[in-house]
Structure formats: structure tokens, C-alpha cells
Amino acid sequence: MRNQLTGGLPLRGLFTAAALLLLSGQPSLPALADDGAVLALVGGTVFDGTGAPARQATVIVAGDRIRAVGPHLAVPKGATIIDVSGKAILPGLFDLHTHWTPEGEPRTTPQIAAAYVAAGVTTVFDFHQQPESFEPRRKWLASLIAPHVQFVARISTPGGHGAAWGDQNTTTWINSPQAARAAVERLKPYKPDAIKIFTDGWRYDLFPDNSSMDEKTLHSLVAAAHHAGWPVLTHTVTVDRGLAAARADVDVIAHALQDRPIDRAAIGQFSRHATGLAPTLAVYEPGKYAPDAPFDEKQTRQFARKFETASHNVRKMHAAGIPIGVATDSGMTNIRHGVSTQRELELLVQAGLSASEALVAATSTSARLVKLDHDRGTIAPGQRADLLVVDGKPWQRITDIYRVNRVLIDGRLIFGEGAPGVLQETAATHLPPVSVQPLIDDFERLDGRTALDTVRLDTFDGGVDRSSLITQIVPGGTKGHILQLAGRMSAKDDAFVGVIFPLSRGSVAPADLSGYRGLRFDLNGKGPFTVRLYGPGSNWAATVEGSADWQTVDLPFSRLEPETGRHVTARAWDAGAIFQVEISATRPGGYSVSMQLDNMAFY
Image 1 (tube, rainbow, N blue to C red):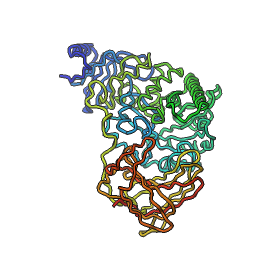
Image 2: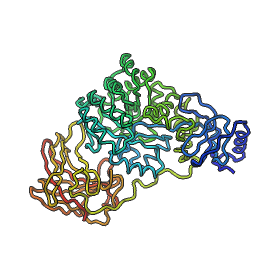
Image 3: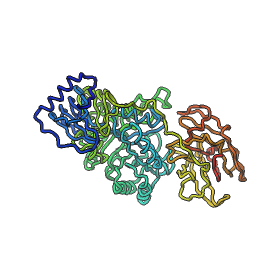
Image 4: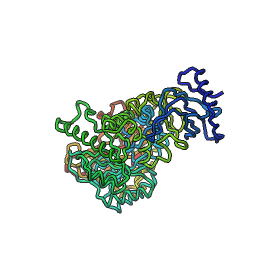
């Protein structure tokens, strides 16, 4: 007897439907290889993602692949039947631009993954992580109910957009063709799935453009990335910089063009290239900011005008045949993971696409733009069985895309009626803690890695004007080398510089410090310094006083005080899950600071 996932329908009706399929005269499928479970989705209407009219059809899945699609297919013996009568079957949706960040909503990886699955989004591009975290995050996601996550490495210009909040182990900075090629070589060991280039220094007309990437550098970077097999997406928000991206053969412009309405000449230039547009209208939609957002009335009017321009340009570019994909910038302020992808489809329809065209944008076009169309994005034999079942007809009424009934990823039913498990809304927010050795770093490795085999990170205030910082390993100390930090503060009240020591690769798994009583290190440098330990959703800090002479600092954990702030909850010290240790210096704007460290360890 076949297994049954009836969706609540009487078994008698399901057997009748199956019998009709078997007696339809359609030849039986060839014998199935031993490639995993066999599923048959019967009774549904298939929108295959190509733009072809929706049609009644059965979809047969073997393992992680679609085996057959057709109106009169014989259901293989032993297949699990999923009755989707009256429902629509679509390819899983794409979101080509997200940030899995603690500042988003949800804020933690299992819950973010669950939000995308519940929205029918089965392939997501994450622009937020440092390359060092790619491998451990891939392993973590493999243990979760999650979409396919493509990790994107970031490259910008010195002081450019995207470089304003991370060091070069987070966002690589380049300013020449030679540096572009070197950046690609540096990233190869991390095996990114794609590259994001911040080519446009126009910060929405709120700040001066001091950091757009020159075209020679951009061309060299795109060519090197393509040679490595990586698609290229860009942060580009102006028409002229968009044209530069197209001339460089960028695959996707990952924002809408907003500085001016696009004209016929510019559209003609775009049409001569294969570059697509993923406009992220959801992040620019007026009214998304909370009432207490720090924007005045003039800026609010500016946002509304830019959104109108962005929508106008999407409509004109789509009408000219320029490929439109789907992206959201989710994880940014008030752009919720999952539901914002669905909202983006509504906004594309409002901008001028039909409901059917918006679905194609979210499936086959997005897959083609990032070179994944050989694997997914349509419902066809051989394609990956990432499928979305919804109530309604979203190709006629796009808001039906919110009515998610079931989601299959890699041929497994993981959400909705009949799914064997639950999503991670109530699951742990982080990996189980790992044990770490006492020595964090004695700075004897000269490859930029700590004694824990993690990569140190520079940290400093963000923004267009930011503090400058140099950290380097130099001779000195009891064993031969020390860490030297030299910084100059930017002209702002909260200027700071510092160094972060991840306790696991990429700070993905927390460390269990419950067997230790405190932190000990050798310090040379005048003035107060802040020691901060980061836990899941909470930070703890203490101030230590440095001097012109070397001293050994013993900092018991009992001295740490909880911090409060944006997305930080004050709670009592908990040594059971700590991600990283930071030592930083805050000084008045324009001041210089120097610090030397050695022999950092727990005791």
C-alpha cells in the first residue's frame, strides 16, 4: 500500500484519484533508481516558473529531483502521495539579497531560516557574513530546517559603502585592478557562492559620493570573479553607476536605480548587456520606518520621491526586456525575513509587472541571473525539487503568495500539512557551546590567526567618517612577538578602535567558559581600555586602566557588568556561551591611541 499524506481529504477520494491516474492510459515511468523517497503531488495546478500558463498536472519527485511533470502520469508503486487538489504548485522562491544579522527580525539563524521556509523561499543569498564563517555556518544550516543559503563575499573601496562597518576580514577594500585580482585570490579558500561589489558611493543623496569604484577596477574584479566561477552582484543605486556595472558584465544590480528617471538612451545601453536588476523595493518602501525613526520631514519626502523613481525605473527597464529578479535587503531596519520576499512580489506588481511576471522574476529569472537555472527555478524533470504549494492562484492574484500550504526542499516535505517536524521558532538560537583552551593568543602566529586558530578582527566606529586603525604583529614580549594597535579617532563623540578575538571560527559556535574564573593579559598603553565579552543577545564589559609600562591585568569575570543598548539585553553574567572577546579604546575625536597586547588567556 502506498504511504498517504492526504492533507485532510478522505482516503477514499484519494484512492479514486490515484486509480484514475493509473487507468489513464499514460505509460508507466521507467524503473526508478535507488535515489531516495518518491513523492507524487497530485490534483494541483502547476505554474512552472517559465511564464507558461498554469495547468493541471502531477509532479513526481524522486530523491531531491523532479522526475516527471504531466497531466496523466502514472504514480509509481510505493510513492507517497500528497493530495494538493485545488492548490497551486510553484517553484520555490528566491531572495537574492538578504542580511542574516542580529539587527534584523528574526535575529537568530534558526529562526531566520524558519521564516524563509514558512514564506516559501527556498534559495537565499546572505550578504552579511564574514568569509571566515562560511564553512561553519554551512555545517550548521545543514542540521536545520532551512532554505539553501548562498554565502556572498563583499568587496568595496576604502571608505566605501559596505566598508564603513567592517574590517578587511569582513569586507575587502580595493582601489586598483591589481588589488581586485588579489582580492579574488584571497577569497578562493573560503569558496564563496557569489561576490557583492559596492560600486556606488552615492548614499541616497544624504552624504557626498567619495568612494565609487572606477571602471577599470570594476572590470578586472568582475572578470576575475567570473573566472573563479562566481556570479557578481553589486550595490548600485544610480543610473550612471548601473550603466558602468552593465558594461563590466555584472550579473545583477542588487538595488533599484533611484537618482533620476531612466531615459531611452540609458535603457538602450542596458539592453545591450545581460545584466539584470533585483530592485529591493521592500527596503525602500515609504512607511516602513517606525514613528520614532531619526528622519526629519524633508528626508521622509526624499525617501518617497526615491521610491517613486525606483518603481518608475523598474517598470521602464522591465518593459524594455531587462531581466528582473527578486531581492529585498531583508535584515535591514523593519525588513522582516521571509514575509518581505512575499511583499517584494506585491511591490513588483505595483511597479508594473503582471502577477505571472513577478512569479517568474522570483523563480526562473532569479535562478538564471545567478547561474543556478541548471539546478532550480522551474518545475521540470531534472530540476531540484524545491516546491511551494499555495492556496489560490498567485499568477492571477499575487497576494495569494502569502497563503503557503506546504514547502518542499530537496524533495523533502518540511513545512505545512503532513510535514513530519516543526520549524525552529522555539528551537535553540545558537549552536551548543564548545570547550576552548585557556590561551586565546600569544601572537606568535604570523598568519593573522590566533592560538585558537581564529581570525582576529579590527573594530572601530562605523560611518562615512570613521576612525583609522592599524594592528600588526611586531617583535617584542616574553616569547618574541606582541600585537600592536595604533589608531586615530574620527571626529565624533563615540569614536573608538579595538580588536576582536573570536573564540570559534567565524564566531559561529559559542565557547563554554564556565570552567574559568577570568581573563588575564599583558597590556602596555596609557588610558582606559574596555574589555567586552559577547554572548547571545547580551554583552558584558569592564574598564581596565593602562599605563606607559607593561603590566599584567587580571580581570575576574565577576567584575564584568551587563550592557544595554540596541538589540542588547542586560542580564547577569553567564559564562556558558561566549562568542568573542574585544578590547577597545574610546577617545575624543582627533586623538591618537596606541596599545600593545601579549599573552591573552583565560584562567
